[in-house]
Image 1 (cartoon, rainbow, N blue to C red):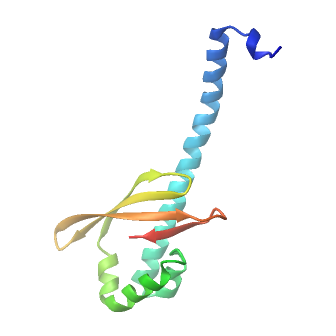
Image 2 (tube, rainbow, N blue to C red):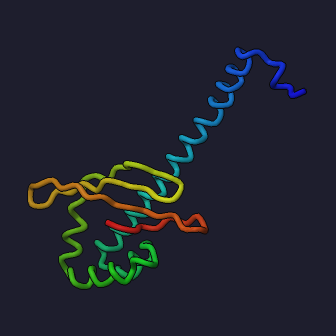
Image 3 (cartoon, rainbow, N blue to C red):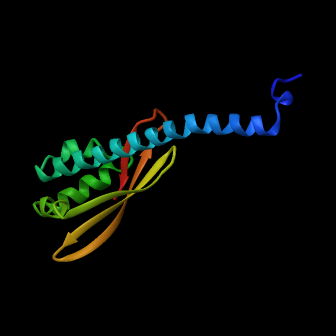
Length: 132
């Protein structure tokens, strides 16, 4: 006979709540760490681009997307530094096990714009900037 089957429903509920009270804060801490990691990765890429260091910025972008962004960075030329300086907010929207969505808010010539930034997690657990 299982130990659990001898417990009353009330004991099972209390035990379940106790387990949740332990696991939920751990999950929130994990989610906060991922959010900080991804925000830091984004900030690093922006800082590289502001300095004109596209090669290091490209190392933070998913390998499948690098050629696309390299061409975009080259096409933008010196305007790239101006464009990446328009960011005013970077807010998490959703984080799952395999991807994350953030909202990039910019101020471009006095007008506020909102863009989606997507991160992907690869099979090795490494997070990459995928699309923006």
